[in-house]
Amino acid sequence: MSIQEKFIKAFKQEHQQILDRLLALKDAIEKTDTDLASNLVEELDQIMGPHFRVEEEALYPMLVEYLGDENVKELLSEHQRAVETLYNFKKCINNRTWLSQHREEALKKLQGFFMHVTGCDGLSIIIERFSEQQKAKLANHLDIVHSEAKPLTQWKSIY
Image (cartoon, rainbow, N blue to C red; front, side, top):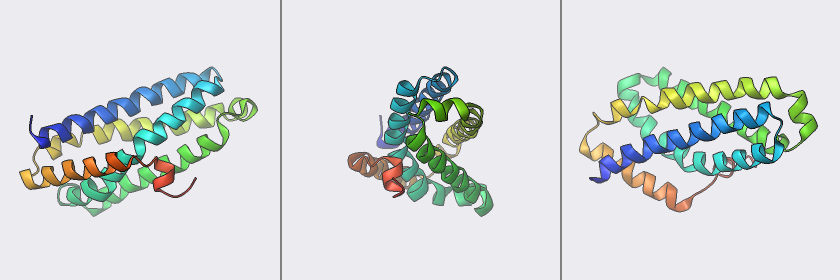
């Protein structure tokens, strides 16, 4: 398997990992299971840090050619909302009272996550059309951000 094929495989696997944890987080929120919810938020923070970095630093600039500047700005806005939501969850989700009082709001925030993850996974169709040089750049950047392994809230310097 080429390095470029490994990138596409890793990109899709990360989306699946994020989606799986978001679905589990939805269940934990519905059950007011603060321990599980808190653990899942930490796992999401770990996975999403490198993933968002490769998207924002390498992939999204390449997508402007295909999606246009405004659509790429919207992807970045979705990321910002996800970061803010994750940060708020990290601060509050382990509090049973908070979770009980804000359950519906938290579940609504997750819907935005679901839309982004499923839509973003479709970008692999465009990535497959990238030049070998572009794919190699993405694969190399993925290796770098995975080796640094900064959680999302740490990379964005908000926690």
